[in-house]
Length: 180
Image (spheres, one colour):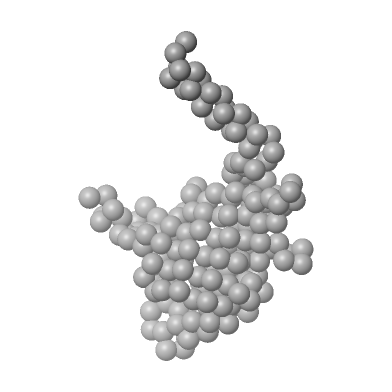
């Protein structure tokens, strides 16, 4: 066996050992099943945030599950740096008395994924990702809609309760545009 073959074999062994360590240690954790308690809990939190807070404008209910130091990054609307700022935007914007065209948010159900996050084997948070779309028609379906966006929500456990810490909402585009 020449030196190059020995080096390649050593690299392969190192990579396989590293992957094995990550899997055994729980550092590399796959998404949870949609039947798991964690998935169901965070899907319910998504519902509180959007179906109740955004769609029905019962902001005080969604406000309870948001961290004070929320950071919300939106590819079209910029950055929101606190829960206080986020709530103000909701109250004065989408749920404001002067808003003449109510917009509704819909989750694309089969797109939702949840990835648990551990610190020394203890669950401290989870990343929730998925696809959603928006419409002024509260009965709109994804198949009939012309738009969608992707989102990533970082949920953390704060005082034994799940709280939304970070949001990235991106790739807001029309389906027609993205298929070309």
